[in-house]
Image 1: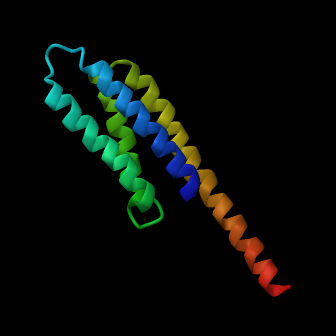
Image 2: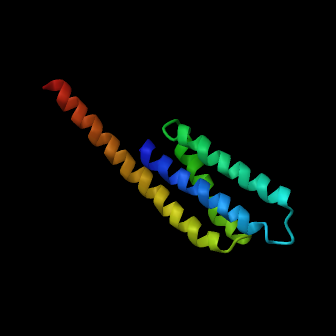
Length: 113
């Protein structure tokens, strides 16, 4: 699960950075505000890569997905990208758990043999 979720989060890191560049064109936002919010979100992406397997890590990932969708208020394309990344996050968690269970089963069978 960790590998799939981390890959999704690193992809989000880059998307958030590019969305920050687009948001800088909005005259109602200061550059400091844009990069403070974008920087915090980008930091959370990287920090969550190490926290995915810990309690609450997946829940924090969902919070990040909701925030990514909500950022569509500033950059409308983020509505679409946020939904795409939320679907990727769901798939990473869902199939990652199945892969982890299969690895544990195969390891148990190898130990038994």
